[in-house]
Image (tube, rainbow, N blue to C red; front, side, top):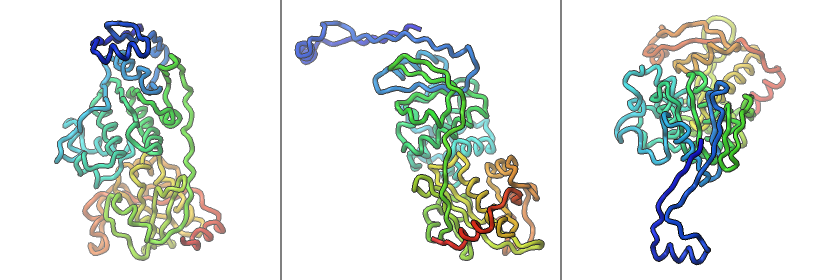
Length: 370
């Protein structure tokens, strides 16, 4: 494709002065052209990346190369009204279960925040909402997302890229990210990359995203307030909870609290609260922390049990070889005083059946409260 962009030049006094200062030709138009050859249809693809420095023509090329795409630019207005909740921005034909699945899949798995207006969300949350909306509204059209991750922290950009890549491939859609940040490439894992500044097109073999190595320690309840606003149920934490904190690159990212389980059968511990901070949702950090703590209890001779109402966590547990569902989604029964929350919502019960942490390591971690 031969692409030409021209714009008229008004020969004002200042323009004439600049021409004289820098010996520029006296032309009536400014002209930029590209000769681009992208063999996109030779092989199937889901995700593309156009990356390069500002001014190299990324936006122009993206709009010309994908004229029928659902384009999302950097100057778009808020996708919903000031008073409307985030969930009300999605197409009316989309069921609430699909809306919840989309928001969770892009790493925005905080139900309390779904009910808020778009403009009060953090920049990172707004970024993920825009991604979910773009994929929901595109249908079979390719989505072109310009200035991709330009307004978010680079850690948020990487984690969000891993989440959106997984979602795009699950939905069988096509997505093209246009950005000046090449640090997202390994996390977005595109099928192809085009660098306009070098006029270089490369196909990329799919590989695993970079690993996320968590540091997990036992902590006191005083660390809970950082995570409490993001839990999908109550912000309250039981006084008897045994709590654990996961950090990544010296940043706190997830929190898990567990309680004794009083019931029939062998001694057990049950999951009480597990929360991942919004900027780090979508790549399985909460599930990894939950699995690790469950393996700790197993190593100490306890059963590890968990009940959840969150659709994303239920789906994850059903796919995981480390958990077995012993109670399908249902309303809990029992004394209303102790189960008043569970009797008003569907929950599913799971038991941990994965590997156990060595007892010595489990005991050392449990006794070392920061």
